[in-house]
Length: 480
Image (cartoon, rainbow, N blue to C red; front, side, top):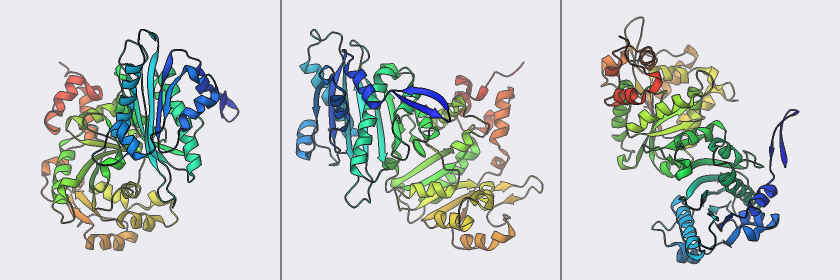
């Protein structure tokens, strides 16, 4: 048993990788197969070494050669092997073989499982650190349908042997968690890093499915990946299932709208629609290869203290109902977000923001951690092919509309602002509805919680009905 310590205080007892493997081996009802491609048979090796493996392992294999792999699992149209589609084919194929070759009458109490991974470790030149897909399909009752956990990983270590060892530990943690921690998915998620450091491995996508996970909201699992510092960014689609950012953003034009969306308002939608039109009309933008992202930062979710999961899901529910793709990130500064996007694309990107956010960008206090200060941050931000689409602000005191032409920045930064303005980095959204400048999400949220009327007309069509039906954001019926 390994002991996790914080100072001199014992937090919990965590079984070693060997102990986890042995506990599974000694459970006479757990029985299944291992199919590992790309990094050797690192996971199953732990079960062989622990002892008693004959009670757990029905088959272990590595279809390392591509022709063998195609013969077993079929040919992929894109000719790629390290994909979610390939992993799921592997899991389904191996489960079908178990059910076909092992008699249920002979093994009435067996809980079958199939563990698989398909990975690419670091290349010889050490330029590509590698990534992969890992998953398990398993039963918790012989008469019940299979459950499934699928995750995507990115290696951080710079040695292939170390990556293989880390992958083996992750595999054991996944299998152990699936059978012994399935009733606590948040703890199960955290257990993936048992005996693994955060600087060894990144998990940037996970999906739970099956009868035992019917209550699990994968969007919430995404949130916990970021909250637990397993990754810096996660993404989920309108259906609520998690998406792999690297796959969704690869060689795409990206337009991002950051906000609290608490709730999503007519202003948000107007900003989105007008900026998307401007962005897609750019010569260097391919409309068919453009991804629009509604981004919420972790710091925004923590604005009122600890993260309120219900509040997060309320926001997510509304954005998904509008058919939008949502990203949760740990990037408080915009330049970090753009640096992240640049890992996947070199094509033109766009940021949609209000004038108030632009003023914040030009506040030097946000860049004190950089040796080059604001100059370094802006170099990282605008070194890429980026444009910022600005939604105007109505000055509360004067009633004047503030845009990029009359916004006030610190006198020390005026010349730098003029430089980026002159070079077309800032684009004003001009055909806005003046009435929308009076809409503020905080005021709407208070109206919803206090049971006031009139907030409905400030939100996009269909959103008020969802808030009322699902009682989101503390909604309660109007007082008599």
